[in-house]
Length: 162
Image 1 (cartoon, one colour):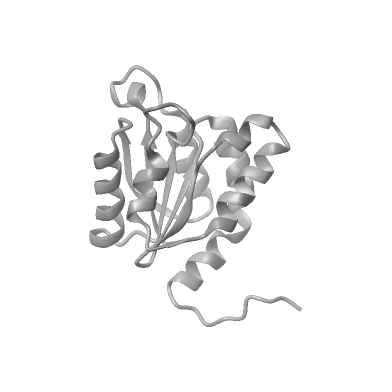
Image 2 (cartoon, helix red, strand yellow):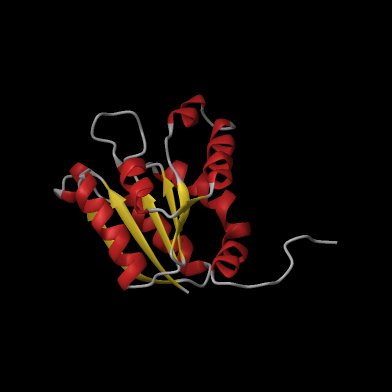
């Protein structure tokens, strides 16, 4: 399955900060058997984020888009707003699980405004911008990603187990 990683960071887009979170996501996705065919680092700009999410879902038809960064409380943190505009259906349980897991590590996890949902047949998930939060989030997502993507693609296999 093809995946994309979109890092949202003003300083990263200017080359002032190395994108450790995005690189970590690429590594984890590759280890899990995904083909990471798209990767970009963009500034915290609503229109640019939205345009890429729509393009990667509609034209490139990626199965999965993971974003990192821009989910906090700063005035320039607009990733959730751009993501919400791109989504056709939200999946609140994913974002809730990411925050719940994060709370086991830091109380600041409750401040993340990340979203998850579906556009066409693409699963889009927002992760915070720190490598630590990305690693913790990956541990939450890894066990369910394949099943979620199969369901989005139309699989009729049963969800319940024994």
